[in-house]
Length: 146
Image (cartoon, rainbow, N blue to C red; front, side, top):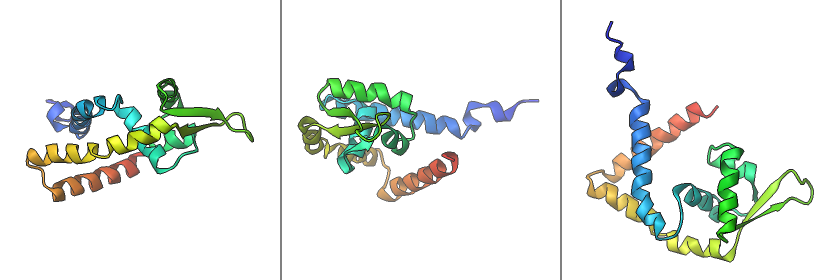
């Protein structure tokens, strides 16, 4: 028996894993200019949309565990990008808000998605292909995140 199901080239998960790592690597020089890591950039995208969220709410949006996101938020606070405060009505909840520096990063980061898409288009991916891939990946996320 050859165990075809165990060959790397027959896996659905490997190209997703590899593409994720390579996309993150492509983001790296763009985000280094801002002093951010990719996970920090994701947190900021959530907070630029709505501040005053709890750690749990941010973790849920990013499909991460709170024990993964808490050290990340702590580093961002140490870097002056956001604040973490215990909720007055329930001290178990921690509320996250941006500092002025965190808000100002939004303007600097505005070109990052465009630069990434340009890199992908220069590599011969069309807008239609990118949109279809995004739609399929969100469908996969919906299926798996139950």
